[in-house]
Structure formats: structure tokens, C-alpha cells
Image 1 (cartoon, rainbow, N blue to C red):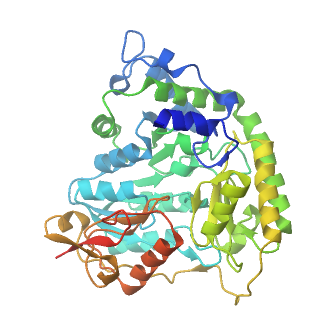
Image 2: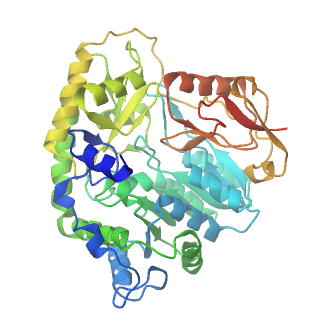
Image 3: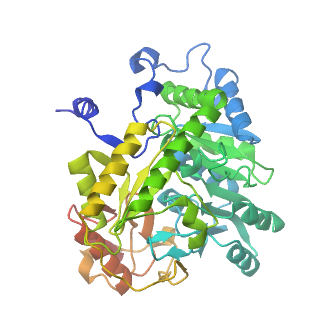
Length: 472
């Protein structure tokens, strides 16, 4: 069986997608036979890299929808947007302020441009074991300490939906005349309904990256890059888009972007009203859980978060007799619900305007049913947000690590060695370890525990994940 046949077979089964892409395979948002509309740059259909006609009009409509100065299509996902934005905003060797919980694409941008990162760490929510937001006050402290920083890069919202105080961070960045780049890949749907946080364009960020496909009805790989101020050089942005995006862009992907934007402009208010109502009903039903815990949007202020995106459904197994991987497997095997992500402490579901009442009902009934079978394990009280997290020892930049001889050694013997590669859980693709960082005892124990849980670790040197690349 080839991939196409496997996909067709899967589509005929009754699995419900609590995961991206945001179109949720919902037939109401389908397109024509893809082969009938798959073309190249023929007469009358414009050219993405020199847009003057229908593609330019589409990008102008997207800019109007999001109220940005300029908006361009991304057909290489947010990865292409992040690499473009970083390359256009810095010179080789510059210093940048980077949230440590950024996606691996940001680290690749640092590597390619030989940048010197100054890391800022989000707080950690100890109850749900998720990253909190980025502190504006700490941003300012680091800008004062490092007055040669040329770019600030943060992720908001996080994979789990935690939103940072972008209005305050934007004001601080502009006070020091440093452009702010926000990886808002998980927030293309924000700002269209009062029940959701506003987006980072509205909050004053200079460059914002959106993955349409994550939370809206658009094909995988589709996204937008928004330029929102004169601190971002639009001509350089266009130059780097030509470098990091294919010279043969898919008209299927670009048509998918166009249709998504048109849908939001014509029916967005109605669709988000219906969607938010479904979310509220789902969360109301989760109040009766006795053992599992769902991160309820109404309670997130109590956790110390600046704001929270209710589209993300985080289900914690802490203080129960099962692991996150066990809950994930139960939902998949017993209820045919495919979740987006799993850790040892929780599972994560992603929702969108394309989710159905039936889909929410299935997840709600499954969680309530599983909850009845679980046992509660008492735990001592703990505060939610903490700054207590291990900071990896930085030995050298990631790009300098390439200049040293490297070797592959058993992972269990790597404590104290300097990593020669990235190690990360996927999803979400946030590096646990960056080349040039020392492998501590605590980090090694974490990596080994993730392996025991069967989580998807990438960056190790063999299929079983028994070896790691280190500096000699």
C-alpha cells in the first residue's frame, strides 16, 4: 500500500481529528479536484515572487483583514516566515534576544546567520507542566544589560495556548528601537471574536508570522507573514522570501490561502460565534471531572497567565494512576479520537471553526467515561507559576559547534559532554538541547524519561535513540 492509498483508507475510517490542520477534513470546506486546478505561472495567474495581479490582490485582502501594513503568502509554513524575518532583520553576527521556548526554525535562523542569542526563559506552570508567558519586565532588564540587541523573538501563543503580554512587550521594544518578531504560528485565528485574545498585529509587534493551516481552514504549509512597522524592512523581507520559498509555489496552496481569507471576511463573525459557543459548552461539561483536569480558560488568570487561547484543550493526568501516553492511547484506540500532542503529564487537542458539535461531544463523553475509571493520587499543594527551571550551560554558539570534531556516544554516558546536535520532542519542536550546550544530569534524566514514556524524541543518532552526537 502506498501513501495515497493509506491516506484514502484512513479518511474512510471514523477517527475524529483533534489536531491540525484546521480544516479538520470537513467536507464543508473542501475544494475541487486538485489535479484540475494545479497549474504553474501561466498567463493571467500572476507570480508569487513578482506579484502584480491576482496574487497581489489576495495579499492586500489578507493585509486588510489583519490590519497590517503588508502581508505576504507563505507556502513553506511558518518555518519559511521565521527564517525570512530573521534573515531580513539582522546582520551576520548580531546579538538577538530569544525566548528559549521558540520553535526549532528560530534556532536554525540563529545558526544560518551566525547570531549570538541572549535567552529569556518563560515561567513554568508546575500544575499542568506547561510553559507560561514571557515577562515584559525581564525583556526590559535584558535590553538594558545588552544594549546591542538587534531583534527580539518570542512565541505567543504557545503550543498549549498561553499568550504573553505583547502590548507591553511591544512598547518596551519600541522604547529601545528594537524590532519585535512574534512567532504567532498558533494564533492566526486570534482577534476575530471577543472570547479569544487579540493578535500580535493589534498589539503592535513589528513582524508577525501566522500558520493558517494550524488553526484555520487551509492546507498544510500555508501561512502569512505580516509587516507592521517601519522597523521591519519590507524590501529585505521580500528578498528573503525569494530565498527561503520555492521558485515553483503551489497554486493549490495559494488558492487555499485565498479561500481562507475570503471565508473569514465574509462569514468569520458567524463561524466564530458558533465555534465559541461549542467551546463554552465543552468546557462547562469538564467541570464534573473528578480525576482528570482540563485547563479551563476562565481559570487561567488564577494560574498567572496574561491571557489564554481557549481553542487549545489541555487534559492533565497529574495525580491520577495513568500517564499522558496512556490517556492518548485510550482516546485513540477506544474512542477513535486522534489528539495533537502528548507528554508524560498531559494530552493536547487542537480545535478550530471547522470542528463539529459531534466532535466536541465525542471528546467530552470519552473524557468523562475515562475519568470514572481512574484513581486519584493525593499530592501536596504547589504554586502554579515558578521561575525555577534548569538553564542549560552555554559553552559555544550552535554555529561554532560545527567547527569542532564530533563523535557519537551512548546517550546514557553523555552527562557533562557538549551537545553537537539539537534534541527536541516533536511536537512541539522546541529544543531541549542546542548544539554547544552542556548535557546536565537533570536534562539527561529528562530525556531518558521521555524515552521510557515512548514520546517522539528527535535529534538522537539512531532509530532507538541510544546515541547522541557530542563535541570531542
